[in-house]
Image 1 (cartoon, rainbow, N blue to C red):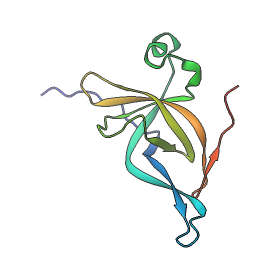
Image 2 (cartoon, rainbow, N blue to C red; image 1 turned 135 degrees about the vertical axis):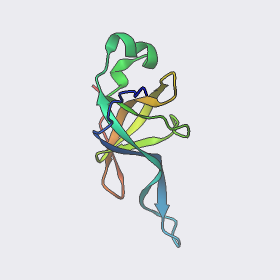
Image 3 (tube, rainbow, N blue to C red; image 1 turned 90 degrees about the vertical axis):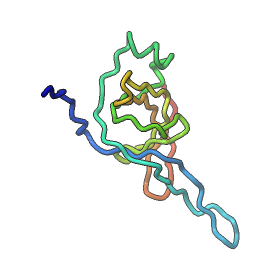
Image 4 (tube, rainbow, N blue to C red; image 1 turned 120 degrees about the horizontal axis):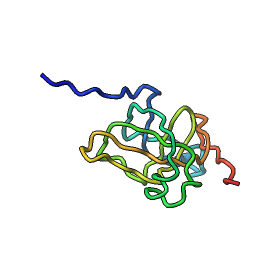
Length: 124
């Protein structure tokens, strides 16, 4: 029997989903935000290879981190990523040929305090 050695994805668990506005039922004033989770994935941090990754993303300067996770067909660029209290936008998704792993190129947009997205400052 042949066993394939797999890399463990053990840097943590990320969540992907959308941020929706919570409003008061009577006044309709904004009272906070909610991160609605669509799913969660184990991940490992990856090094950004400028020579290769620039072809995937275009402008590698817009990427803060790159992570490797298991392939999730419902994960799209429209989702926000919640990872270790930080909120990221997906700049690019890159699935491997077997559709087992997915590489996410992420740009930080802020911090999540449990009730609000605190916007990050722009890249310098």
